[in-house]
Length: 93
Image (cartoon, rainbow, N blue to C red):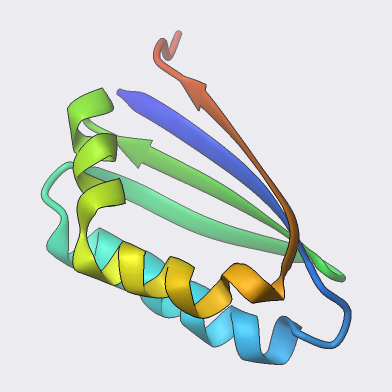
């Protein structure tokens, strides 16, 4: 398993436009990407936290290359203040 967390700070007043696009990206990831096991969206005010689980790094790299992800980023990039991504290549149970 390969876990990715992303903390996104959305510009004030942009959440109403951002959230449907984020939700659609997550849905398409879960439904169309074989290696995407989980894609959760958490929100607190203008901060969005993503928790994503992939089979491995290759599956995450494939996610980044998808048309739906590239389209999403093109649509929302100007809505963001900041984005911090952390990858966890080892899951301990």
